[in-house]
Image (cartoon, rainbow over all chains, first blue to last red; front, side, top):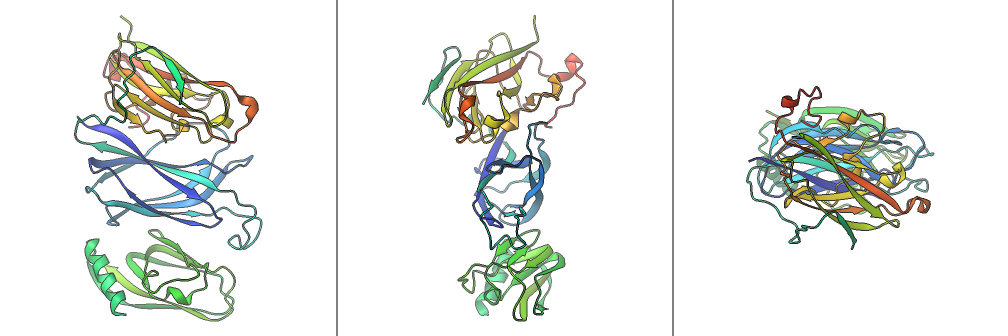
Length: 154
Length: 107
Length: 139
């Protein structure tokens, strides 16, 4: 039975105008990438939505296929569920996902690369929705709880 | 230059890219230039003289984006760019500058 | 026999940056988990909050999965609020494990607060058996 997994690529942007390289390896049992969402996680603060804070490109299978060129924005309020954009990319086992994220936020100066005082570091996450073909369960923890709802601070 | 060409050949082979044409491609920028945009769809442009560009220069394309670091090594700068390519200098050029690429037109 | 149930799991967060493990069990009268929805009391605690989830030993979300990916605002109709699973996720008394991690640096006056995780449990495997008009949002 085909199972779906969400693989997350996290990027940290620490400088205005920074180019963040993406070099990521998916688990070898992932057979196909069927969707993606890329979004700002935290760090940017604004009272209004910002349509673009950066640009993203993702190539699959060790630079054989460029499939994603996207822009990342900032939302002030939670509205709709984020929708995955559709892909249909067979994944070659063990190959790299590569690409870049470019911060394009506009600072108060004409040359933002030289003056970075306004800038605050932030994080971007890329969610890749992938199918795996085998049905082996991928257990992360050996502790299976059979009790009723409970919480435990760790 | 031998290393550059070898590297490019290996890259094309690894990525199953079959070249229809390989040639040099130069663009000259006069004093005062701060931004330039051009197109390279269905082709790859391998930058060969990254060290000649001012540190902080942003080369932005659909497939690859780089900012030229302060101490760049010769092979380190051989990135390839395709699609819409823009070159943004950190400040208006004070001397005329030439950007050199090896252009690979894809079959 | 009922075909739908919305099961709630509450997770208490006491302080900024808390990382809290939770464990529960699905109602054994329902066969499948169709979707999930997370509710937090303020958008301020949502920015950067993450949740890992495992149901019946099956990884559903890694720990770095943002809560924002499974929630939406009040203006969204209740039937469309849920993040729907495309694959079959077994309910029927399955063990649920997870970890909620609060983002650090948010407003301290918001604490403590409860995260409410809603699981949409169903008995039918095909949505058309119930005459649903809403297509799978994440297909």
